[in-house]
Length: 164
Image (cartoon, rainbow, N blue to C red; front, side, top):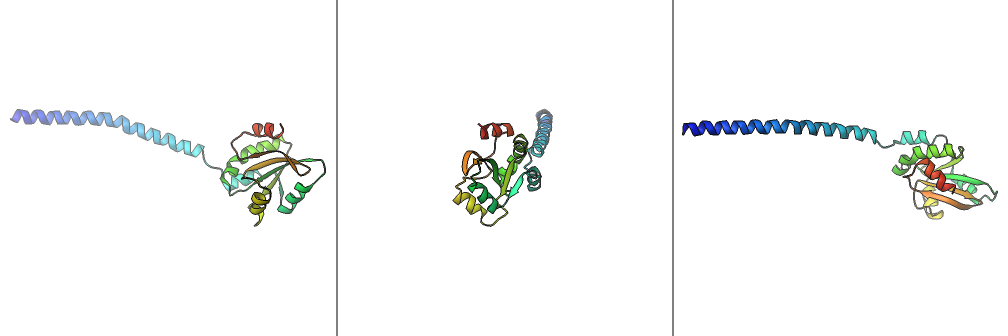
C-alpha cells in the first residue's frame, strides 16, 4: 500500500511537471501574439480630426454660398469639389488619399466642410442629393461629369476615375 501511495505521488508529480513544461511555451506564445496585436493596433490607428485638418489644409475652402454659386456657374470651366467633414470617420480615413489626389490634380481641389454651417447637411443631402461623404465631383457648367462617393481607393485610382 505504501508503495502504491509513493508510486501515485510520483506519477502525479511527473504529470504536473509535464503539464507545466507544456504550459510555459503556450504562455510565451500568448504574450508574443498580444504584443504583435498591440503593435498592429498602433500601426492601423484611426486618423484624428487634427490629422484630417492637416491633410485637407491645402484645399481651397468654400462656404455654402460659394458652393451654390459654383454649381450654378456656366463659364465652361471644370471644377473639382470635395464635400466632407471632420466628424465623418470615412472622410478622415480618406483624407491622406485626397491630399495626394490634390497634388495629382494640380492643387485644384475645392473643399466644402459641411460641419461648418448649420443647414449644410440638409443642402448637400436633400437639395443636391449626395448620398454620403466623402464625395468628390468634377463639374462643368453645373453638370456633374464624374463623381466618387466613399473612400477606399488610392489617389491615383481616384484621379484616373474622375478624369476618365
